[in-house]
Length: 137
Image (tube, rainbow, N blue to C red; front, top):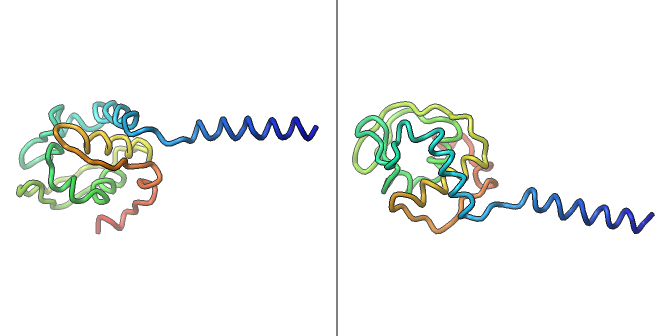
């Protein structure tokens, strides 16, 4: 009986560690591309260039690259009010898209590494979980 419990515990541990294992950066970027195409492309366009004065660019965006936590919070909670991106003022509303923390991590990894953007680190689900709305204040 003790042997059975030990084997059962080992199997459960192996299964749960593979289920809850963080994605590789490449897997996250690939998943993020799909999320981007489902939720973000309408405003920020396939090129990531956005629409001048209306929807800010994500391609080579100084705001995105210099404000990672605010960018995550904007996706997570929505964003309203004035921001300056690449010396251009944007003052509109981005509603919360209803993405979970893993989806937000994936889409952030995608946009941080697409259209000539480059970000060495990987945004993890745990990191996104820690971001609070107060970051936007």
